[in-house]
Image 1 (cartoon, one colour):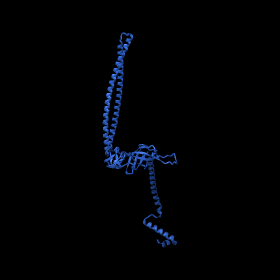
Image 2 (image 1 turned 120 degrees about the horizontal axis):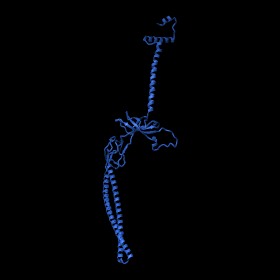
Image 3 (image 1 turned 60 degrees about the horizontal axis):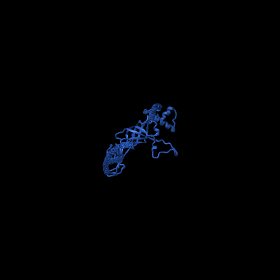
Image 4 (image 1 turned 90 degrees about the horizontal axis):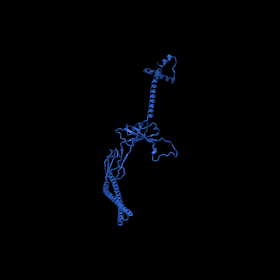
Length: 388
């Protein structure tokens, strides 16, 4: 139907101008939609109403998923405490010689695994051998002197015993002579005619002589006793000399043994700084050994320690081994914040004070370590402790 037909049918003249042209264009579009089978203007609102429930359903699913995700995150964050201020730790063993000398052999390389007692470095100990031979000779000489002193002590003991026996015999004889002299005096007093003056004088002289002999024998016994004590003191001094030389021999033997520097613990060699031909001094560091026993030192904030206890399970993410986590457990919690053990601990009693959350070292023992994960002191880790 054209414009002339519509005018004839309606009995009204057609509109003119831009509005009429726009209306014609809209009518043409509606005609094309109808010809293509698309819904006309009368079907637009129901289609929208049919699409609204789907949109609401999708929005509800997203909202529920967000709520579940937030709930899961809150549950996880409330049950675990984590920190990135953590690292692998151990007591590194520094190997040093105990004698000075020239290195004649180095038997290990960097990063090599060694066992306790493994030979690391061999040092020329010629001076130590000479010192050992010298003190061993001195020990032999001192032992001979000790034996001589003991023999002298035995002789002095016998001499003292003989002198004491002589003194005892002399005392008995002097006592008998004195008794005889006293008997003659008493008899003379009772009957002067019964005893001759010559007999009385002889008895008195005999008692006096034997008394002098008794005194001489006692003095001899005392002298022998002093000689015996002197011999005993000499033997004791000689024995002390022998013991001192035995200690020197043991020290010299240790010095000879120090020519072999061995590994005190099992671990991996690190920072080897010695080479064959070097002259090393006592206490000079030759290398370090990283022990096989390692742990994690994690510096947690003091506000994270509320529910943290020894024995709690820990999952440790290692930066060097991102594909496999390490399992462990809390061993202990340090009594005191890390700053309290510094060279210059803070003094809050002076100056202005600003409260800062401190960090407390927590020691975490490792339960299982992947075989292909090379852990070493200083490596960064992120432990996550299950506290609930």
